[in-house]
Image (tube, rainbow, N blue to C red):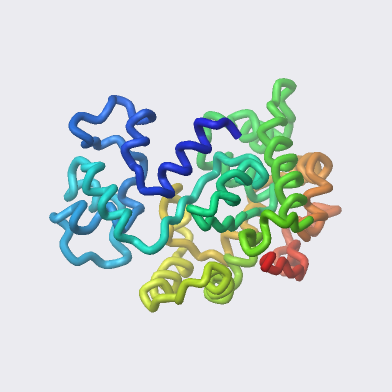
Length: 296
């Protein structure tokens, strides 16, 4: 992990949001910007004092409403609001391996805890093929035609599996620097029983589970089929979505993924399929009952 990326994370955990200005184009003027990606996903950035227009807000506010009503983001107010909070949480998909976070984990000023969310690589590929249609165009062509493109970029898959394997191996080997700091969560476990898994996560963090969080989970994990079409939306029929890739990927693509990612599939407790019938039979679960306890 590059030092600049690590410095950015450290600054964000310290609520130094001005550091973001180095990465926002066009450059913010007087510490204000309307270019912060997914600002509407943060309750803190959509409520007073950062946004007076919203007033007391419901936890299920739509991102678009925040963007429309709040206007530009004042980073000074955002920084002040951040510093009034008891905890800072950052979701990032740009950290290849947990070992890259060691310097931050060992920084006594941060008291950083890492929750690594993993998913069946077969599900990841299916999801990214829909979300990033241009980037994964050749995978989509393979699925539609049944013919593997000669110039398919398989590193879009193998890099994910290699990073998972290395990162999870580090976490499960339980080095002393991760003691009390690391928890592994399978997406499928979270999807099948979101309340139970959320309770485990909050217990690991040492944070009381608020009733508003419980209500949010109840409201956002029981959506219909149409809700899954919004790529950045949060309303999902989570249990159904977890293995829906089995109905969209061809058996040939699944075979290819299983061959390329066999080690990490075994490591994380994801079963292989040996036929089209096994793939499409959703009564046959591909998720082993496997417990990944936090390293306490």
